[in-house]
Length: 319
Image (cartoon, rainbow, N blue to C red):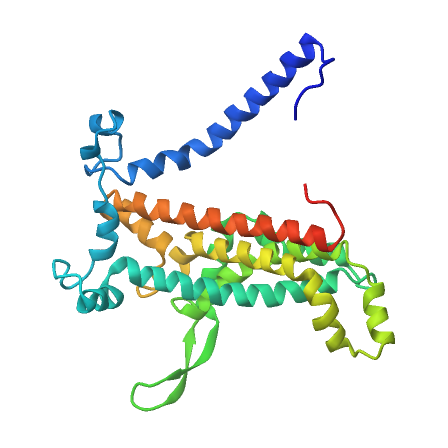
């Protein structure tokens, strides 16, 4: 915002000082992320800027670490990049396997968190709901409680709980398996961590919802189910989608619960990065981090667009 022409020298000094301070704070927060991006193109196996990189020498930059994301774990990494090469990549490449695990777990946990969180938010916004504040505090507690405590509790609880699952060894039969060390356990854990985000975003959307629209739909003959899907759901959809995106990002980036609950076959991208830092230090981790930053930026941009759309639907001028 431009300063008015009648601003005094002191007001101008404060204005530009304020902008400078904000820029420095923003740079301080973004610097760790921004440094990762150029380092992922380092031609040398180092986590520091080489002399060639500092002098912008093209020989100091390379896509070798992104290529390693493709070939690491493959049976024939040097084969010509034809159809068989990409089949080998899809079936055997380590980073592809952990990416598939992350997507499957993330989508499953997001669907579960979105459904349960939306139902909870609809109930908590009802004026006749008793103990709303207490129930809300319990439901959003996973955001407040340190993740190491939640993961420890989940590990002991899931080690005790057993669920019936189909087994195809020696014929089709049902056996009771522990949640710990299973995909179901990780999905439930990530859903529990994502539900608070859905509750907060949907509740914020419902705060400006006009309940008279539901009564008007009922007066026109719509049953509760029709009124919900034809009136309520389209208006709260931006909040639901925003909460789902936050839940997906939470699941996609979570590592502590996976370290406690997951088995050997349930490796995710964050856990593979953790293993890479501890066992095999490679700048390929920086390449993965750069890709995750790009995905996060796209998701945040989507959330912002949905927020603006929600404000327009509610008749509020987007800020």
